[in-house]
Length: 119
Image (cartoon, rainbow, N blue to C red; front, side, top):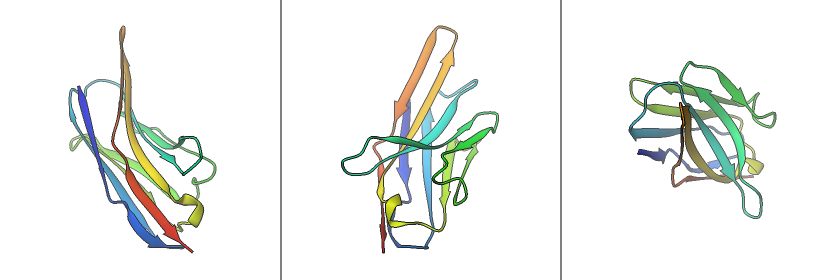
């Protein structure tokens, strides 16, 4: 079992910054990936950024020049640094952990944290 707890969301003006954190606990070992998804009202959940346990990162085109993802494996925490925020970044941001270890597939989600960007 893996538990994920997000924090750092809130209300910010356009052009501002926020840093989201996702603290993981439980059985985390081996190769795995942690990432941030977001879901705006009336829209599908979309992948924003991901980082592997080895440090490889990927960001969606819509945020790659503004957001940075990082992780601290010792703290089992992944961060999403968001800068130059836009109203269209408003969404609930979810943390996800996934891994494939032999025949075992793991997939866990946090409960989400609201990010609201005012114009």
